[in-house]
Amino acid sequence: QVQLVESGGGLVQAGGSLRLSCAASRSALSISIMAWYRQAPGKQRELVATVARGGATTYTDSVKGRFTISRDDAKNTVYLQMNSLKPEDTAVYYCKVVIWGVGSWGQGTQVTVSS
Image (tube, rainbow, N blue to C red):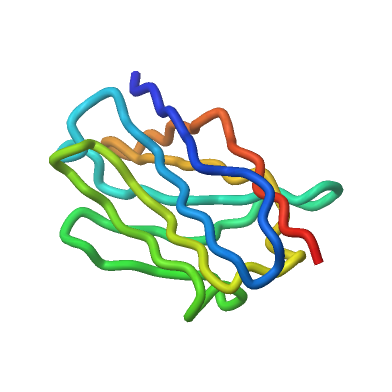
């Protein structure tokens, strides 16, 4: 079992930036995939970005060029740098890690972008 603690959410104006962090309670070296998801009110949870051990990344189309996912295995932490934020980015953001095929979720952090 791994515990995940997220931070960095908040209220920002459109065009602004936020950086989300998610710290894991165990070594990131054992974590194959680290990811960020988001869930807006009334919508399904969607995958935003992933980063694999070794650094390969993927992004959903709507955030490409604006968001950057990264991981620091020395700190057991995954980050999501969000730039040029839009009101449609408003959601609860969740981190997820996969260890030996088993996924674990963080508690979520609210991101609100005002127009």
